Amino acid sequence: MDSAVLIADENFRIFQVNNSFLELFDNAAETVVDKKFGTVSGCVYTIMENLPCGETSACSNCALRQSVMRTLLEKVPIDKAEFNRSFYINSRLVEKYMRFSTRFIKFHGRKMILVLIYDVTALEFQKRELQKKQAQIDIDLAAAAEIQKSLLPDAVPDSERIQIAWKFQPSEKIGGDIFNIHYPEQNQIGLYMLDVCGHGVSAALIAVAVSQFFTSKTNLLGKKTTLQAPEKVLDSLNKAFPFERFDSFFSISYITIDSLTGILTYSCAGHPPLVIIRKDNHLRILHKHGPVIGVDTNVMYEQEQKQLYPGDKIVLYTDGILELCNKDGEFFGKNRFYRILKKYGEKSPEQLIEIIYARAKDYCEGKKIDDDISILVVEYTG
Image (cartoon, rainbow, N blue to C red):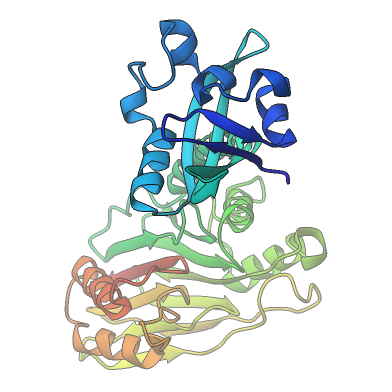
């Protein structure tokens, strides 16, 4: 047997062992029989305190001894209990992690205990090493999450004509959603929201790469240049992020708003449609879109313009909010989402976002959120 086996009496005196036991504690067969377990195994307390097994300071709390006595007195079997102890083996102090099982038996007409010991020291050290690595990964992920958060909007335009609020809730420490706001001139505002396929580290890295692309020398959204047309922005992204290079794709909505005229210009690549909430709470769904970024580098995106009026709100979001599930596996869905927008459309952007998120959490009924959630609301005050 791979496991060490011993037969002992009520005093934990050994009467029989197998070869695996001898290998585990490196003892010759003639030095084992008729000796107590602590002496045979080289228990650290037996050696350091120079006391017999059963009389050291640790014996009263020894899980192995307690289990042996319980099995002997109550005939209660013990299965795969844990036993961790240091032993002197070949004059070296060795830490052992073991699991053991006990059975009541009769041996040569006497009541005795059969003990099976499984050495899991190597597995325990592997587990500890994995835990150390996981702890370092968690630290790295937390740092990466802070970096990703730093790429989200840090301020809103100082404008009496525009009010903006947002919420970002990743499903893990880092996610594949990202959005930002750019305003090179007081009356020009550009906003984008993207959702990389999947979530976690790989999705977040692509999201960060896209964010860097926006602020690179191409000056698509730089604060010192005029905003480019949304369709041109998406064309540039589509050429820069082919699926063959990144093994992934993403959806994105990009809009510009002229706060003087109230003209909204938008282009969409496979992203959930923008929603305009009119002042009378009537919803206008903006369905014009092209394919997701990366699947077809030859496609040319189109854009569309809409007139905004004082009190109108524009809602950008990712499908994480729509694909939330309750305990029955039913989606939160766009119809429920639209009903909330229609019912609470007169609220401020901050209030509307908090209401949406609160309804979404209630719908999940405590179930873990499996996808990133991003919501951004812009109110045109005129």
